[in-house]
Length: 532
Image 1 (cartoon, rainbow, N blue to C red):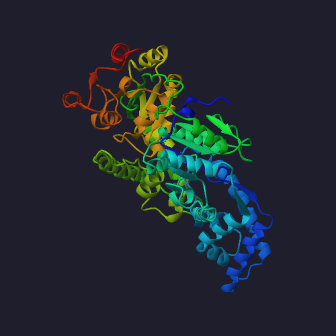
Image 2 (tube, rainbow, N blue to C red):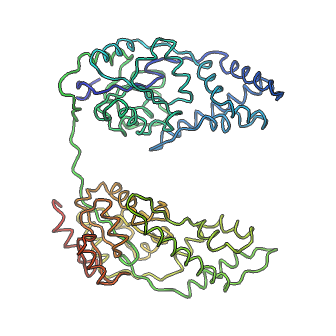
Image 3 (cartoon, rainbow, N blue to C red):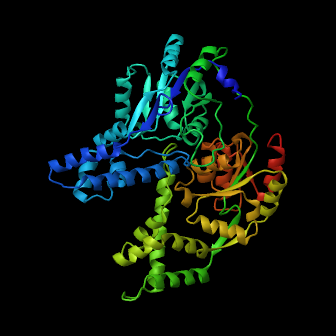
């Protein structure tokens, strides 16, 4: 195959997978049975008699389920590894009698070590000794990055083959808690080798785990050495390796001929990111006023929900007073979160906490259970009922201008109900002009935490230096935008903040502009944002 340019550059470090790269594994006939026999002996010591056949069946069923779990994790952007006690308790021994299950959980390290050593044999792959020798000659550290349920057993295998001292670092998923394709495990190994992923070669054998992990970590070159997994991924993988070799001998040959700059050379320069409009909802897209009729219908509905047959009826009046108390608690919560300093996570209230704990603190256990189960739906209904929304003058024109200039728009909103925000935009018939919504109740964080704005920038593929954030609250919107590195932080009059406070935010540098209405942002987008 044609190699990427990066293959020809000398890496600062080489990171190798374990199975499929350093070693070729093969299933041992009777391996699972041998593990089951060892487990049966251990159980007999405490007089927990479980037939070997039953243990073997549990192990086999658990291994199949675990295989499906592993494939599923390969679709996740940042999967964590299961702890040894989880692997044994939730997969391998989940259907054994409880005393046996608990004993095997307690001895999970030994059980997983036995599985690794007895179920598979390990043969050193051709080219590995040559690759390690060549790396030593060039002063290039070599590390191991491997998904493993027993890093302990992998170290034993290395020692048995005389390789115990040949690696600068060994990163096994069960020991570091990160599982490929999580890029963090590669980043950790690179740092331990004194470099960064961009200056490393990463060598694996799978597309769904190794190639994807390498690409996510931004390694200089992703290389595969073929194993029985390479050409049979569990699902379609769009990322491609820079080179594929039948054995590690190909990696050794590539290192032998590599030369020139130690800086990885990219084959293409990433396109420049464009601008985006990030816009708050309440007070910016729409104004609100209380809707007594809708709120009365809501509290009547909730009172009926909390009055099942066999329970004393809860009156709408009591529901209304409990809602008021919950709103007061929510206000206290928001003030507490807003006082957090930069870097501290700023959480959003969870619907279950709001309805079960704040609203329902004085209610019966049965009613609190109903509230916990129905919290998401209750919050969505409450979000629609508590106020009547009116689209602000100029919003439609602003969004249409963004559409015409191909500027993506992302709503970034602190809200108790993202679904009600979306519903309001649908009611205003502007939903088709909005690319996405980042809502605090769904993300679990609220402004002035920068997380919502950072995520919105990623969604839009936007350059923060060319992006406009339009809000109405200096201490929420402007602070969050500044923390996210957004250059143009615009506040609009007519929202929940008085004009003097808006002007003061510009004076102290929180905001960069104050406008009279959303329509005024069109000129800012088309004149202040470069290279539209």
